[in-house]
Image 1 (cartoon, rainbow, N blue to C red):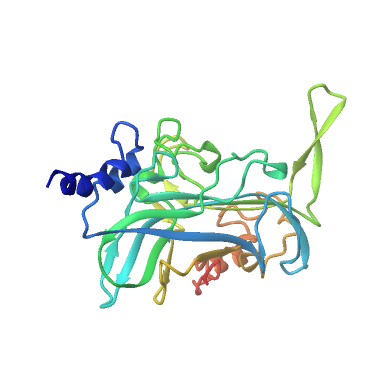
Image 2: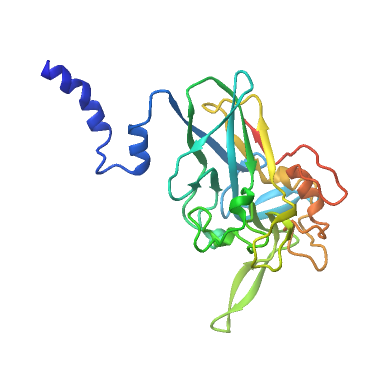
Length: 305
């Protein structure tokens, strides 16, 4: 009897010693049998090529430009699965203390090397969490940070909302998407650094920074009560197997109708979501967002495979 008892509990003891396991491992060891762990995988590409810092890609945009990306990150929130009956089931994200907080996750495809040196070495390519056991056939998520978290102070916010490079000001909130690149027409520039007789490369290039605009508040450092242009994107795939399929984010598709070799005079580099910036019209259309008098069309930034 004693030997059978030890045989039964030994796998549990080996699986995780609570004194040594991480919080996530402890969660997994104590998770009820009726709870399903899921991993929603993301892949970053430029057309038919994988995204990588330091790599250049040809044939981008209206001018078939060569681009060299220097950043590629975006926030995803409100992940949900659709069951066989079409019922929406929210995914409870693992709280890993780095990439996922509440129902928000930061997807990070840059590694801090080469032209991405202003980034960080860590990368995050899948969202992990739990749902009740069941049969699921689709997914839905939002590209962006929810309003209730979007306008907090990033210097005291928990990770991944503490990346100040992903933040504008309290009035506007976070950059939901941050893609930076040098292009054939907007190449690397040089700017003085100490000592004065030295030069260092700086990407002027073309940027895509998606975030909320026209947010009503008394000042840039005051959280708003509302934003006229929230610029959050709902993405859905009705025939998606989380165990087999991958969400693909494609820079080339996003920029297909954009001229990345020029910048509208007196505007921010590329598209930084400004309603007055004509460079944003084709980019916002690719995100599936309305822009000024341009109505929303289906998004093409994400696809599945």
